[in-house]
Amino acid sequence: MYPSAVQEAYRAELASIREKGIFKEERFIHSPQAADIRVEFPRGADLKEVINLCSNNYLGLSSHPEVVAAAHRALDERGYGMSSVRFICGTQDIHKELEGKLTEFLGTEDTILFPSCMDANAGVFEAVLNEQDVMIADRLVHASMVDGMRLCRAKQDTYKHADMKHLEQKLQEHQDARIRMIITDGVFSMDGDLAPLDEICALADKYTAMVFVDDSHATGFMGKTGRGTHEHCSVFGRIDIITTTLGKALGGASGGCVSGRAEIVELCRQRARPYLFSNAVPPPIAGAALKVLEILSKTTERRDKLEANTKFWRRALAEAGFVIKEGDSPIVPIMLFNAKLSQDISRDLYREGIYVIGFFFPVVPAGQARIRTQMSADHDIPMLERAVESFKKVGAKYGILGLDKKGIIEKYGQ
Image (cartoon, rainbow, N blue to C red):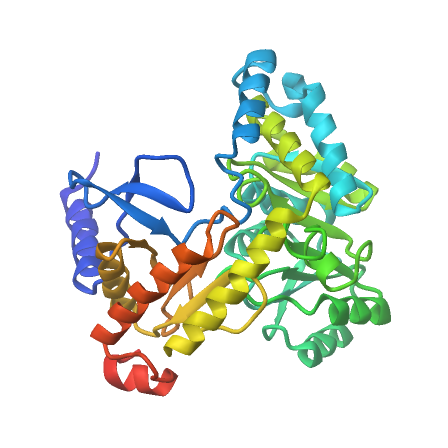
């Protein structure tokens, strides 16, 4: 029975979220994922053509005709779904082929597919660590890693974001552990900055530690050939465990993996619960992902265009007077520091034909609200120029152009 008092408590909590101006509203896309999309918002409103600046479709491959055709072929030849987990009767030849291609692309020893990178991060720590070990994580690691660490019996510790002196201190403190595992994102999804993997690997060598990197927001486009942050930071082959996703640059559907040392991958096959108790990646997704890797192996044209778009966008926003997070990645946060302000600006930008979302606590730390913009190889410069003008118009309306962090907080609070 659902007690009326409980129902009223939930309703009051939802009403409070609405009153604070931080209620998350979904928008309904009536077109394929792309740089420009047709959106219904709010529900029942007329469709609106908008420039999409908040998708993880970094390489513009979500609706690429060759990728879609490959998914159709796999659907026709291998079926819709496996209806089973991998070790029972859920492994097809294309799953093994995809694992091999990912291993080659990432430069590792072996790879194991998971239904998502969330599942990969949920399963890997428990599979390879025990109570004799310690996990030392950057304090801004993705929530999926935090959840995975909670499921593991190993001790947990953290170091200040990208602070190598603090990391070294933690490594010194945990010299009695059987295994010391340093855990970080490659590109941090909310800030767009990169982990200093060269320095992390140097410390790992010095203190005999393992290195774990979630490269979901880097695989396919960071580095000269798009292998990821380990290529970008010149530590190719030195990362013990890489988790990443097929759901962003590599086609944008779903699926993830653990890639790294052969023994670690095999332990995941034997012990990782999300692998053992979840259906295999659907055949159409596996087939499409194979086509994506084929496309990326032929040319760097898309990652090169993404890099050019990113440079243009970062420069244009800074010149317009917005506070942005510095970095090299196509994730470009516009810092607003106030949750309601981020919501209000995102709604006004939608009216101007720009699709962006305000991010605020608990997605980012309290007082660090922002609009996270993301570049795609599908964008072109004229499209981005139109977007900049819209941002300038809305920014002028709220009087934030040219204001620094202190000025925005004084005007709107934090």
